Length: 428
Ligand SMILES: *Cc1c(COP(=O)(O)O)cnc(C)c1O
Image (cartoon, rainbow, N blue to C red; front, side):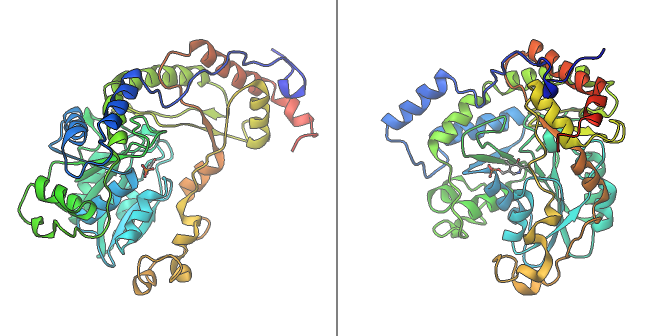
């Protein structure tokens, strides 16, 4: 059906307002935070009170033995890499398509992030490329369950076992996601979850690391805390002598953030379910449009938190119309669409090998001298995906059927009338 695109003066396809807002703070969150404030509980040194509550509740939620709440997800990753033994001159394999913290925390350990390509369908780290990147210096593999889609954990764990490597799962996009029925974060040696405000389990600024290994817990504890916490909460006696000093960082969480996370955890499953229903509905609505590939979800996984919704655009199938022009047309229709705001890490200056030695303080120059200088073409899959990515909002806590119908209709309208974009060259 020929319809004039809104970009060219036609009526908009999307008329329903997007009322979704995140985080979804409850009255209970407000009450708990107020109560702590009134009690003067604005710093808790040990794992007591609200700190203990959120750690125990999250460990129960995942079915894991130990949980350590921290000031953010980045600090969890640093502690996790340290805990599994990543140190001076070691290499850790990290996907090039992730949030920067997954890799910069490897630098913090004076080690080298060795970047790795991703799977074209799931966008998660590609096990075959992991295997290619292993050297005698490799110590660990960092896995990211990108946009909630679990990485191929069976293959990754098998590679890790074969080569004696540790596995750290960055689950910041994937709270509650499952791989073959197992919750992510419980499969590798340590699971790290950001609880930053935009994440599906928000504390504002907070993170939580989980493990079934007491030694790893104690190492994370001792890197991240000093004083009371190490003394009181160590599970073994190996690190207690470091309790007064710790190992430098102080990654203690603010109790108010812990309280928000504790309250939000009670609603996590319900929010996951709302996201799942909305985003699967959207995917159904967008399927069958030539040139648009909605997110792929493998049959053996669930996406849990579904932190982002990314789809792929095919310029050729859209009659040569550029992604930017297609997006301009969608925006005119009322769709909140964006390009990918993450950047592939291999183009970032901290990974441009020895060049930034002495500017970026980690790793030391003699280790940095071993870092690769990456160039365009080094990660063909990630680069090909990246140029085609479009991002839509996630619809987080309530059904949005009417709006989602209109989103799908807007995509269809622009795709069906793509010739209007081919002939109109007033746009760039
Ligand atoms: C948000 C995020 C982090 C970092 O978490 P912060 O709490 O912001 O420090 C790490 N990894 C991924 C994949 C993230 O999305």
